[in-house]
Length: 170
Image 1 (tube, one colour):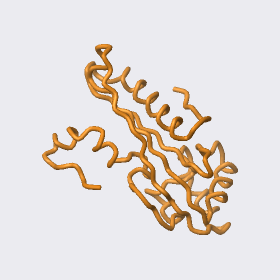
Image 2: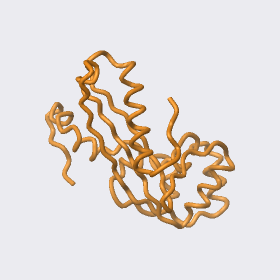
Image 3: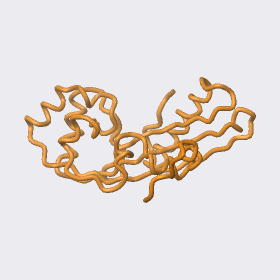
C-alpha cells in the first residue's frame, strides 16, 4: 500500500488511515469490522513524515528541538456492511500538541544510535526512549503513541460496551 505524503495534513492522515483499513479488509474474515490508523507530525502546516535515513532523522529532531508541533491521528473504521458492498464508515482525526525540550547534539546522537526513530512519524517514539525528548503533551497522549483511543471510543462506543466498561471521559 502506497501512503499519501503531500497535501493538507488532515486529508493526508485520514486518507492513509482509509487505505490501511481497506488493505486490512482484504485480510479480515468476511463481515468483520476493520480499523485503519495513521499518525503524522505537523510543523508549520506541513507533515514531516518518516525519515528515510539517519540524516533525515537528525534533521527532523533538530527542527523539532525547543518547539511545539501537532500530532494528527487519523482513524477509519469500516463496518461489517463493507463486505456486502454497503459500507459503514466512521472516521475522524485527533489532534495533540507536543513540545520538545531543547535538544543538544549528544542527546540527538544518543537517540539516533538507539534506532528507535526508524519508521516513526517525526522520527521519534514518545512511548519509548523518545519520551526524554518531550517537555509537554497537550491532548490525548495515546494519539501521540499512534492510536487515539479517545477518538476511537467516540467513533465506536460499542467496542467499549463489549468489555463491560464505559468509555473514558474527556
